[in-house]
Image (cartoon, rainbow, N blue to C red; front, side):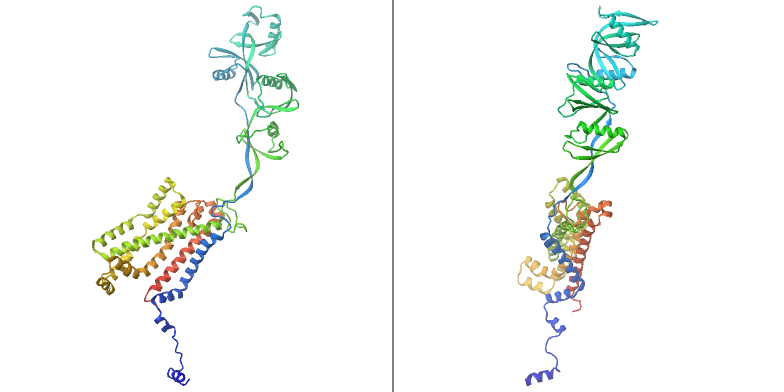
Length: 577
């Protein structure tokens, strides 16, 4: 006890423990660097940011409830085109069984109609033209039985077939001419009247074809409307009859301004209309009830109509008119990608343009961006250490050669080369996953020159130091002198350069991905996520698609820069201890 008192008296009562200044003096160089680094507040902020980015990207991706490529869908009610309705202005031709009415005859028929003629010839075949109305003509062929020539109001008859021109035929002919008709019946035979100049021909007529602007639609796909039915139906519509017979069956008729609906045994059979109604999608059959409902809506000038199908489901349809055509549109519930959904409990940062969860994409995108950054920097450092170490140690022509190679790489225009390589990879359709590693190699091979130049400069000054003279005297091999004794002395500067370069590499990857040259869909990176701002509408209306990715890039690059600044100050021997 007395000795302790004496010691305390000699030291003035002060503690014998080391103070902060004495403790620093006995710390190892590595501990002193660490102490200076951890005292740097900005460096600590940067370190916290990077740790958070790693946790967010790698740990967050593992616990995320969704997958990187998982697409979310939703049900939307969308209005879609269902059918088209247009007034038919083209001639529709129906030909009797066993007869022919070729295209050449159709063209001559149109000329005859335009010229007001009642007959025409096509390829040496004569046809008669019987006009029912402006939208309906019968094409007939038959035997000429007589000709009539009018001279000063007197009709002179000349028989072509002896005995065929009976008194009843003459009387029926004269009655038809007085009524301005082009056909008549007499003695149970149908006759047609054709005009050729001043000579009128009386012919025994056989109806071989119909040329009309009416469209026939069957009640089902299996219904094939016969030629006889068409003739009888058109005649009944012309006569405004309520029923007619065809093929031995009686049909009832329900007419409206747009056409007529024919019933067989009380069930719908066919619709005749001047409108052509067709489904937009192949494979959809439009029932007669639907066609008739659409025509009634058009006739009434309505903008919508309601139709109940066979299953009892009621659907509202919208009529959209453009010039003389109508489009029937309906509201349909469809499954679509849930694109640009706003932030919610299910998707904290909403969804992107593909219907994928934005938060999950950011997590996996961080993995790609950080992976590209670290792999690229490792490639740059490895190549730079080897090339710079060899150049700095050997000097002479080796140094000159390597430095000229470095100069060449400095002169390479990186961005045009990236664009060319990106176009080549697009042309070859390289797999998106393999493309990531190609991108890393491309960035690393173009970025090692600055590292090599720094290593070479440091080694030029270190190789003349006493410890290198001693290593050479001991017979240590060249590669051990470079990589065991020289390179470790450059490690502090390499760490600083690598840390600062990580931020630049991530920015470069983001730029390339934004331009469509980097990481490709479906893989995510922060760069290709903000590629959505190529669309001004998305940029102004869906902030949650691109702002979070931009902030993550900003924070990551800032964090690496803070760490790099902190390491540079910590390795500086002139820093205050």
